Length: 157
Image: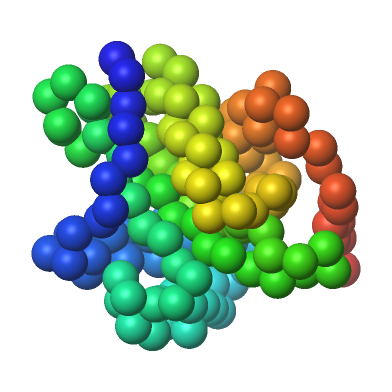
């Protein structure tokens, strides 16, 4: 299967946000030990802050990942233009290939398309965060040439 990106549609936005916030909160609880109520509040606040104007939010790019042949939606991608010490970079907030389609290299293809999309906007670097327990994602990103630039650690006392 070959994949392509298409802009997320307005009628898809609310469901995308609800799903994404829930997944982000769940990851904070499961992977970072954040209490559920705090994780849910942070997820809601982060998404509201970044996507204040929904799909028209400046510097935010939301896409559906589709099967290029059938146009079936098989996942989603969200990246943004962010400023850092080296100028503007692409920052991947979220990439998800839906469960029935995982394990086929489609996430790898989608990341390649994000790279092309970012290059077309004149961006020369992509960064992202991965929770420490997400070994599948960390392995994928390493295989694509991403290097770990910081590792945050914690211990509950």
